[in-house]
Length: 303
Image (cartoon, rainbow, N blue to C red; front, side, top):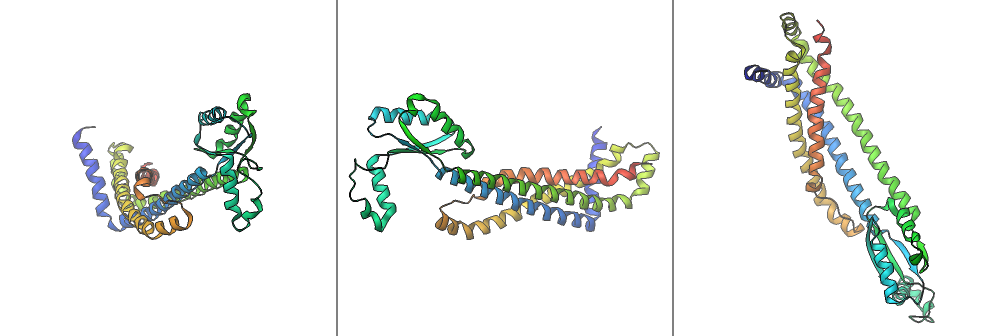
């Protein structure tokens, strides 16, 4: 395709956008509604996933060890646990600190433990192990038990299986929900954008028929309408990004301090989700515009 033909097709596509202001505006509004809703869904899902990730870092596996182990034996256990894949951190609590922590938890009833000394009490020294992925909790436990030399020094391994299962289900459920919503919105948008562009095509049906009779290919006829869809998609992407950024920054400024002070969780800044949003918006905007254009022209190309 030479330069003159290419510039003609692109020029026609841009002319269609600004020539049919009402249909372009209607298509743009629908795409904006779809993309902003999708963007808010992405922002919500990203923040929920981030919170779950932060909870994961605070949900430890507790490895309780036998009394009387030497410093070298304790170091051996710690080094082994740290070497396991997906282990994020390992924190040691001595037997004396275990008693101290128990007293702090009992608060006003701490006197119930007064008869115990730092070395003579039922609480065990332990390692608090956090993971990079809670789904690997079972693998980490199996890896610890796989070493006979380490296993014989351990009394018990405590895991929060119920909480871990609940978090994993919540994470999966959130992703399925927003993915399903996204698919629904995309389908609705394609249908509406297709119908909107179809009005433009219908108005030029005689022109298209003449072009077909004189030998124009389907791709040649289709190209300006595809350009029109792409232009609308790019405009929608730019506007949606600005609007979503404004909404997100407003919500972040209002909610961030409240969430941190009440839950200790951190919300993501817009810059953290911007890349994912812009990729999805570009694919959605251009994809919906192109697909809507192609589908809307099918019957008019059958001459």
